[in-house]
Length: 314
Image (tube, rainbow, N blue to C red; front, top):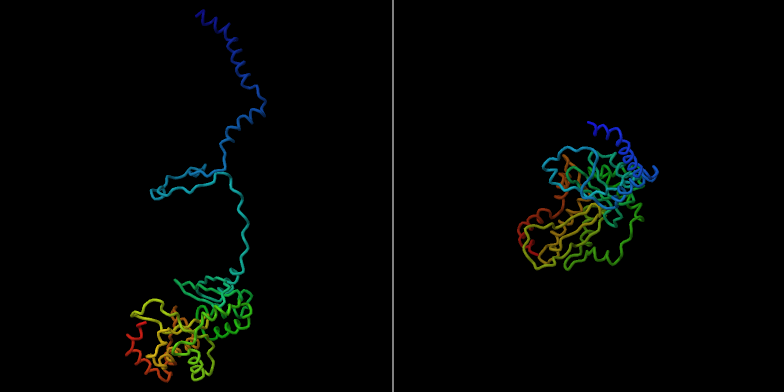
């Protein structure tokens, strides 16, 4: 008891002195220097690198098994810059909205600088995917209404209005090099001249009212073989181009059959492709009735049935 009281009464000041001395040595830096010294180790850990593990302060709920199977995307650990201001809508987006106002279906528009395909329309899954020449960017409301009708219905009135607009603004279409144009269009074949046949039919049945370009299709580059089917002719509404299959340019094919195919494609410019019950009708009842007015309609059908195997070998 005596020794304990002696330490408590006589040695405590010495202990306290030693303790205060140690604390003084630790506090020898001014407050500003202590703060800087304490921050340096933390700052040394910052680096402009990608970190494989995303970091967050908020607590996250345990990930589901499917979520845990996804590897985190590398994330930049430095503070992000403010997001840029919204970009102004382009002219194409404005044109899409203006045409959409005259349509019921959904429109997806792409503005192009094509030389031949001025208007191209495809319907996929209820969406009209349209490629449109830039000449329509400054079109007046009347033209936009016609575009909306043409895209959905392809009616004759809107088609005529748009064709007139294209002709008026044809100077905005880039010219195609004469060499490539000559390679693209080939009306003179080994047996038949398509331009002569077209002109004859145009006078005979349409009072020269059909305006279209004519060409033979591409020749088969491989060895001849039997095909299960083939399109003997096609008509491109956007290009106003009639293409006849080169299999018809042979001696055994009679002229009246070539004329029947050409006549069929010319009718497409007259009757278009109206939308019936949500689908385009390329061969309407009016179209089928007009096709039968071809002088050799039944003769051409009979010859096709009798020579189909020979015709499809090319």
